[in-house]
Amino acid sequence: MALLIDGKEISKQIKDELKQKAADLKSKGVEVTLAVIQVGDDPASSVYVRNKKKGCEYIGIGSLSYELSGETTQEELLALIGELNRRKDVNGILVQLPLPGHIDEDTVIRAIDPAKDVDGFHPQSVGALCIGQPGFVSCTPAGIIQLLKRSGIEIEGKECVILGRSNIVGKPMSLLMLRENATVTIAHSRTKNLREVTGRADILIAAVGKPKMITRDYVKEGAVVIDVGINRDENNKLCGDVDFEDVEPVCSAITPVPGGVGPMTIAMLLNNCIESAGF
Ligand code: NAP
Image (tube, rainbow, N blue to C red; front, side, top):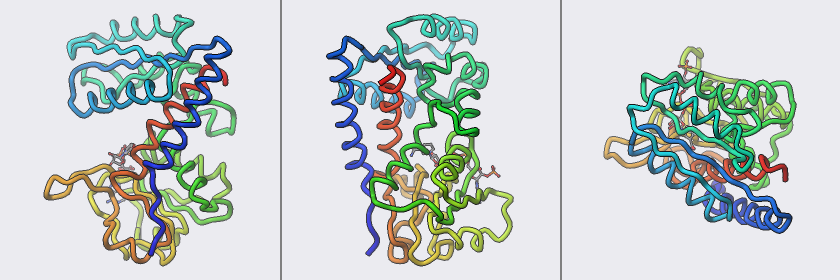
């Protein structure tokens, strides 16, 4: 039977470690505060924002919440970011995506001071990751590295195939796996002979956003399978990009959905907040 990689348990370990670090910082007189901005009232975004605030409370750091109307102009949003950039009591700034269509996400991301870019989306953070310099790392890929390491899965020298090349998951994931000395292949919608490519993977990371697309014919026997997808199946039930029931019997370790990669994203965001305070 495959090892079930328990993201809930591992994220709790990380949050408990961060709670200790936050307490240590407090004892030295350093307060940590995350500012979270939401524009509009998209229900999924509201859930994410609520969970981020709960995470801050859990580890004992402050959070400031800005719930702006969907009519907010780009100039107003940029002015708020400018103010938060200047505030010494704010360590991290997070703008919940997606933003309403009249606001340009790239402009907004670029407006955040890279020293407060706890989501790791600023081009300077991404560039630093690319050339191996210090900077904030995008939370979901950073969480996957923690899941692998804390489950005792060796990365060095392994064939890693990443399915998906988005800026927030696939691309930073490939850079992190490279940093861990894996041999990395990135596959996407134009990849030919996809099953042949994914079938070479010792570690297969699926970030496609297609419910249960990855069946056992995509997976080498004994591979480690990480499922980033958060989708709804035909019965509106939460599911990943991997067909768990079909793949679990042939792999050596696998993440469930929910309870795998998902909980790690907030844990790593909180980790970035603590780092932003210069721990
Ligand atoms: P995205 O921006 O839509 O990117 C999807 C990628 O998958 C693209 O690179 C696309 O290729 C590729 N793709 C799509 N269909 C394919 C196919 N049939 N064969 C091969 N490649 C295919 O998605 P994302 O933002 O990376 O998110 C991916 C999934 O992860 C979603 O379900 C999302 O909800 C989930 N997610 C979860 C977390 C978490 O915390 N657990 C965080 C972020 C995202 P092209 O580039 O060629 O179009």
